[in-house]
Image (cartoon, rainbow, N blue to C red; front, side, top):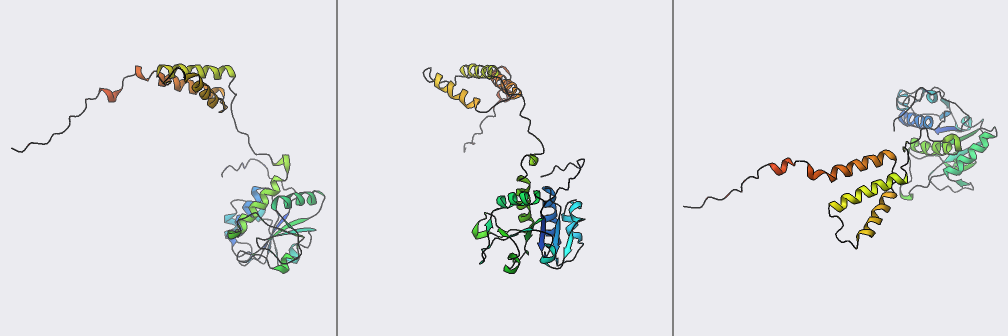
Length: 273
């Protein structure tokens, strides 16, 4: 989905930290950074990344999310990465044998909004590509966030998981998370314009002998009008449709090149002499 407007300034508003525990691939880090940037997140923290930092593959996959990549912080342990946070949620697709609240991404986003809005620091903890977080790491969090995934195929790529949580964070912003542009539906057609279309179409159908019996014509006309009324046409669409009907209604007046071409004679078999 392309459409970045580079003329608009970035606004680094308070947001939850995204903490990736021992990420293995720079590509996943870069993709996660891009997902964060899409929805206004910028605080990315890495715990002991396997390929080290900085990472050229991460920068490449970030797709110009430079404001995220340039602010990456690297830590040796999760404890260090979350030391300044007063609310931490861990993300996992597996059930854990521990007394820990489990919430969905929408609930998590709303609680993060409230906590950060009150001046607190918060973060979302994501595990390794292969096996996620272990129980000792999950125990450091205040609650578990999980997604309503298919149980038989629950594993998500790190960047995908970050994208879902980042989207929910943005959506929880309310009015400020309005769509970046509106659709242009044109000026709605008036009832008089619609009736003009109906009458023109019905006259053309009469000339084309569409209504097979006079008794059925009223009900068929009502059905056609009801069908077209549901479409919600604008003024330009009504004008276009009327032009289409007029063109089809006059098609018998135009020469048909195919009709003027002589038909090829059928080939006959030579009789045996």
